[in-house]
Amino acid sequence: MDQTIIINFPGGIISPGNLYNILIATSKAKIPFVRFGLRQQLLVDAAIYNLATFTSELDKIGIEYEIDKNQFPNIISSYPAEEIFIRNSWLTGGIYKDILDDMDFKPRVKVNICDSNQSFTPMLTGNINWIASSQAEHYWHLIIRFPKTNVTYEWKKICYTNHIAKLTKAIEKVITNHPSLFIDNEQADGEDLLKLVDQDNFILKLAEQSVVLSNFKLPYYEGLNRYNSKYWLGIYRRDELFSVAFLKKLCQLCLDTKLGQLCCTSWKTIIVKGIEESDKFRWNNLLEEYEINMRHAANELNFQVEDNCLEGLELKNFLVKHLSINDTRTFGICFGIKTRKKSEVFSSILIRKRYLIKLFMIKLLPVYDILCAKDFSPNERTGEIFSSSNPKAILPEQIRRAIYKFYKHRQVALNTNENTAFPKFEESDKKTADFYYQCNSCLTIYNEEIGEIENNIKPGTTFVNLTEDYCCMLCEGEKSNFSKINQSALQLL
Image (cartoon, rainbow, N blue to C red; front, side):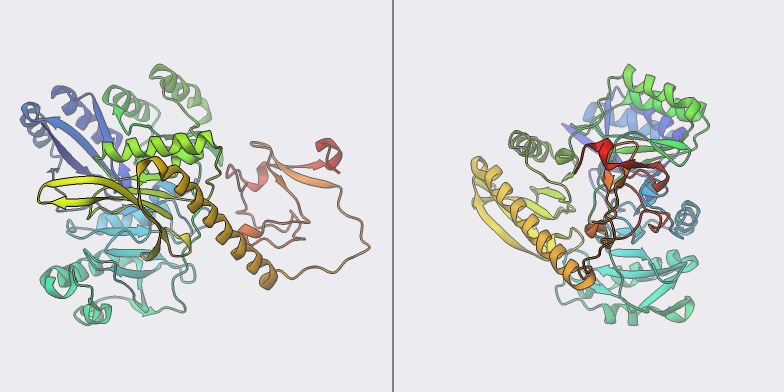
C-alpha cells in the first residue's frame, strides 16, 4: 500500500536547509524513516492515505519529485569522495558544482560525472559517462552506454569542462529523438550517434590515449575520520533506513556548525565533510543519542543491492552471515545482488536471481546465478557465468569459490606485474634497513624492501621518495601520519 517518492540531489550534494524542510514534510505526513538510493537520491515510502499530505507539503516548498517512476534519473558524481578519498586531482569541488549549475535541464538518460582516480562512485553505470582526464586538465573522456543495452562506446575526443553540460544536452537530444537507433538496440553505434551532434559548437580535442579507470578499491566509508585538519563523518544503516528525527537533528547540527552541505553516496550512505575539531564532541553526542552503530565489517559494506528491495537485503544479510562465520576475506571485491530483470548494480561478483518455471504471472523454483565481471572490474559490462541455477542453501559455498577465483586472478595479475614492471633487484652487500614506517592510526607497516606491489610501488622504494599523496592502504591515513619505528620495537626479525 506504499508508494515511493523520489527526490533527486544532483551530484549527491544536499543542502541541510532543503533536506530539513523535506523532513518537516515527512513528519507532517507521519513518515518515520527515509532511505537513500543508488543514484544518490532520497527515497520516501508513503502510505497511500498520507501521500497527498506529503506531496502537497513538497509543492509548498518547491521541491521537485516523482512518484513510483524515474523518468528523470539523478545525475550522480564522485563529489562525495572529493578531498577525503580523492587527493591531488585537478577536479575540485568547485568544478563539480560549476558543471551541475550549468545543467539547465533534467536529463531523461542517466548521467555520471566522475574522477578517474577513484572507485567510490560507479563510473559507467550511466548512459552518458563523463570521466575526468588524467592527462589533460579540464578535459573529460566520454563513454556512452546505450540505454537498455550493454553496448558501450568510448569517444576518441575529449571535451572541455565548460561545455560538458551543453554537450550532454545535445547527446541526450539525439538519443531521445532516434530511439530505434540508440535505445534498446544491441547494434547501436557510437560513431553514428556523434555524427548527429554539431561538434563545431564545443571545445574538443583528440584524446592522447584511452581513458584509464582505477582498479576497484572500496574505502572504509563510515565512522568519524580525520582528514587534513578536519573530520568527515560517514553513516551506514544496515536496513537502509534513516530515522527522520535523527536526520532533522543532523541537519540542525550542520547549520549550527556552519556546514553548508552534506552528501549522499552510491552506497546508500551519507557523508558530512568539514567537521571542525572543536565540534567533534557534538557529532559524537548525536551518534550516541540515536545509537548509531559504527565500524561494520568490510564484507558487509562492499555489497550493492537494488533500491526498494527487501528481498535483496535479506539475501545480503544471509550471505554476510556466512562470510563472517567462515571468516572469509573479501577485500577488493564488490558484490551485487540483482532480483529484477532491468535493474542495475555495480559489482565484481553478481548474484542474480531467476526462476526455473515462469508461467504467466506464476513464478516457481527460485535459483541464483553467480556472474563474474571481466577481470573482476565492476566497471566492465561483460562477464562470465561462474555458477548457475544454485539453490539458496548452497549459495554461500558457491560465493566462497567465486571469491577464491577472484584472489587467484588477482595473484596472477600481481605476479605478472611484478615480473614485468618490477624486475628483481640484484643481491647487495648493503645492510638491510632495520626500521619500518608505521601508520599512527591503524598501525599498518610500510616496508621499504617490499614496497606495495598492489599500489604500483616498487620494492626498494624509500618512504621519503613516496609521493606526497601516498596514503595508508588500510585506513587511508596521510603520509604525514606515519612514524619511523625500529624493527626491534615491533619484535620482528
